[in-house]
Length: 157
Image 1: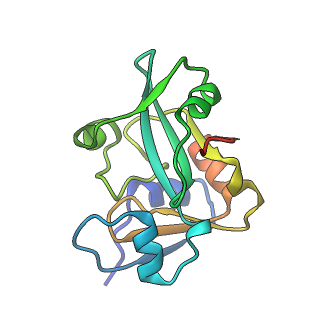
Image 2 (image 1 turned 90 degrees about the horizontal axis):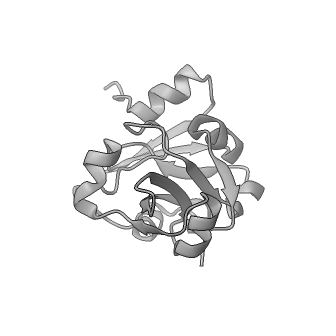
Image 3 (image 1 turned 180 degrees about the vertical axis):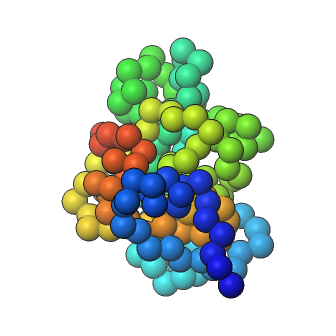
């Protein structure tokens, strides 16, 4: 059976960025820590994608370790906003084109400013959502920076 490519994977292919795909059975939302434990993966290299709205009305994407909490003040500073807040779960699909639990920082409907927690900078490889529930992408953080046109900042609490 041929793996169906997600937007994220098509963009990585187009940019000629090396990545690996992992798929797993999952019929409901689990948080990233549960997924890492279920798959025997190191939660310190598994990253989740969070989408926030800024005071200005713009949207911003933050990529942080699955076991970490986003520091909203630091996140706002990183994108030059007075404040940011998480968007409501019901708005994820409309804003990003992805569903909760399958939201990749690559290939959203629009290219939003994206910040990756600085903890990723020293890693050889990180795991992010592949763009659907049950799909993961393994890639070098520098390649994620390139594909998502992102930057690093200290954004966890």
